Length: 243
Image (cartoon, rainbow, N blue to C red; front, side, top):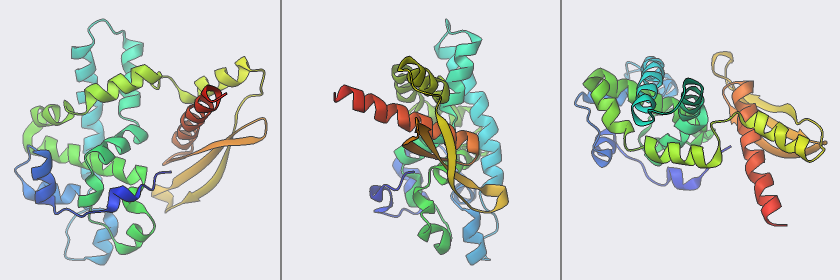
């Protein structure tokens, strides 16, 4: 779970957000829609549309653009490797991190209740807003606009993934770690869930030999389990380095 106080220190209007990032987007209405969570509409009836349709579109555009980018930049990489790398790059956790990098939280419009519940710093919220922004960029400027924007983010992300092998399934990696040390298979337990049925957030704890190692958050039980395994691997690696 991510509740970084630095994320919410400032607020930005959509125009300032776009100017800071030099976003190639001309239609201010599209930008405003991309930055509007549905909770804002509940409290501001004059607002006409939230970002959920743009989020749907952005999700599909990201799959294509990231796949094409990998194909062009890694001519020796086989299909399986590209598939794993793309899956890591478009995961909820990675897209949420992209949202943090560009500080999209500062420009999001959301209801007071959602904000008080930590919505502005929630990984799933940042991921969804980032996808909506990609959808808006696509509608405004097509694939070239999305390419131009993602070219700033993808190279460093790919390097981090390759350095840490995080394109591999973290649950498999954690199981390998436990087996290599003669410990039982990791156990995953749902410890919390929140939100309406159509948009739930799950918190999962991973345990090894009955010991709670780490927790992860996601919009599905599977993504939360993966996030927990990834966090556990990081913590266990630090433990072993400290010995």
